[in-house]
Length: 430
Ligand code: HSE
Image (cartoon, rainbow, N blue to C red; front, side):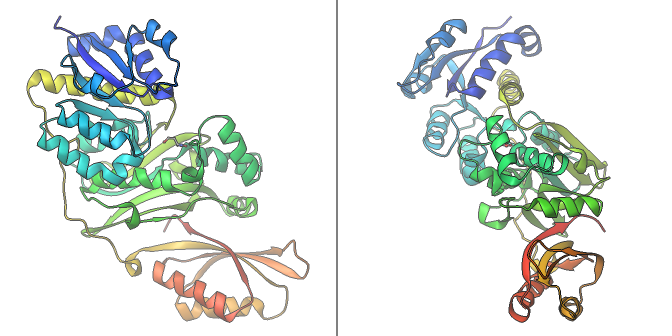
């Protein structure tokens, strides 16, 4: 048995604790796989934190200075599980410059500064791995980078935020309203400490930036992802969608058309017989359409201490393998393509529109005229009494049209009618 590979942890919260547990509980298998023990010897915590009991249990030294870890010649790999941008970004950069390999689960950081950190790792001939940053326990990045390496991916659709999937599930199955569903998700600990990034789609967008790089080799930034969350989504819309044969899901998508891609996050009506419609509660799934394999879907827990830690420890083991083979310094995903974005006039889909209009003769005709002028056909129409007296609530599902056509319709509704456009969502399907 070779000498142990030593690891320094930056942060000892829920995920850091999970790393210690997985290393301890699965020690025998890990050692047999990599041929040496893998052990955390030091953890960086804030001076205000009390982690003495844990340090004793896992036989590790608690430190308050980064230098205690990155200047320790015994430590080969640093695991960053602090979250947020700073000081995590500086700490990772310092660790790489000090010659350490780095594993992180930090999606916010990777989506915004991933290229810079990956280039630094490459320059330093060190590895930077981050399997846990997308969909926690689902091994999706390595699957795309390795198992789908020979395939031509056309689209990646993901339910990559557990908080919103939990909320939407409860809104459909228990008719909970938005606020009650959010409160429950927070109590169960799925949401970020500030759930803004969850409900506004930002957390999912971070993950789609990373997935776009792996699937298409293109580096996009957050401004290039069209993001809409589920804040304020009405229970009524979710229920009508259900009646029309659709399940509302917060879908992150990155889709290739020719040599360009479009990345987006938003609530989407998913046909109830599509595999993504069956992903319930806090679970995540990533659906991949590719020319070789066809359709494949990867399902599992998108967060949580042990699932996330399992992905982190697998990254650690991959690095140990590479150290042993002398093949360090390659990027997690080597595939690179020039970034090109699909223009809005070429991005087409069906749409769901929910409107409130006066319950008077000729009102619907106005809507029909606007749609006809834009060249948009109607596939389904539902009208019911609105809660406001003398008003009707009209829901339509259109045929496929471009984002530009949809914007024109929204503009015409605002300028030419006294309808209230309550919501719009994309609808998946042909
Ligand atoms: N808040 C995130 C979620 C955690 O709800 O999925 C995992 O990134």
